Length: 394
Ligand SMILES: *[C@@H]1O[C@H](CO)[C@@H](O)[C@H](O)[C@H]1NC(C)=O
View 1: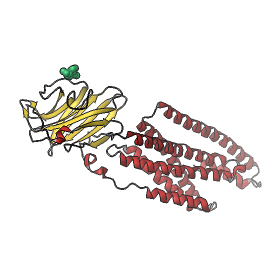
View 2 (view 1 turned 90 degrees about the vertical axis):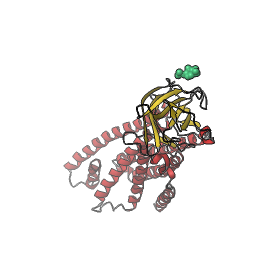
View 3 (view 1 turned 180 degrees about the horizontal axis):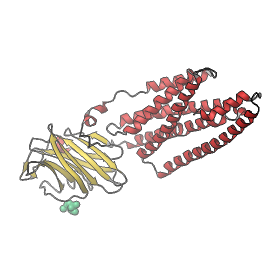
View 4 (view 1 turned 30 degrees about the vertical axis):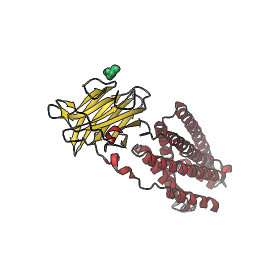
């Protein structure tokens, strides 16, 4: 027991050491407020022209909603953001350009760019909800583009200019930052840095660790506790099975949690808020659960009843949140369907086992109860009472 306690303590300390350093994620694009109706899943600060891009990509429909934010080169200038489906530079870009229109309002026009002479035209992608704003020295382009399926990494190009003549944006400056304002945008992972491999590996490790710990081991441990208890012969074996399952689950889970924090700090700008918040809640509740073990009152103590209620409440919350977060993670990872199917299968089997054991437990307990009520002073009565309480204590 002392060994287990020591192990727990070191796991908890290790977890605390893994706490994320306060990152710079709160600066730059993440701190830009685009209004409550314009919330995007991800954002990135682009490396040139003080600009940033916010986006939400819907994989199912290949719809990309964006907000491009940049200061124009002069007050009456323009800003542009484009995807180049055929190359990497300006030529061939399918551009959204924002500037003050003839009516004096900000607007967005689309251009199929072939050279410096711009002519408004349709672009290769269907567009909708185009809008522009100019406030606080920055222009913003909003819009939704219907991309080709599987176009998850695109060549982006952005630009700013200082003037518009007769409704046509004039040439931009030719400084280095005007010429280098292009790159690859990975719509799933954020701007790719050319070394996507290690992040992918880390994401997979994160997924496996967490699915096994929070998603599988903890539910199994709960099943041990709830159903083995009914069998007197399994006492105290159930307790040790429960403890080792939850302990292993917790330690592996903390490792998985730490990889998650690390991933979160790497993919600055790409925010999976719900997944992250559930993860942090999970870790806190599970850690609480571990420490509450030390405060567990004696079996006969009058507070033990309340401790049991607490223990069950937090325990089941952790399991439910854990399973939810595994599914959230699977969605984010965008893994092959077979992994989602595999996890659904495992969790359904566990659910099936739990349901049948639940039925068996009730039958056993009710039988025992009726047997005991016919011989109330039987030698078995205390054990019987304990067992009768068991399904009701949840
Ligand atoms: C854009 O212009 C190029 C060159 O003129 C042309 O080949 C292409 O079809 C145009 N794209 C669209 C969407 O109009």
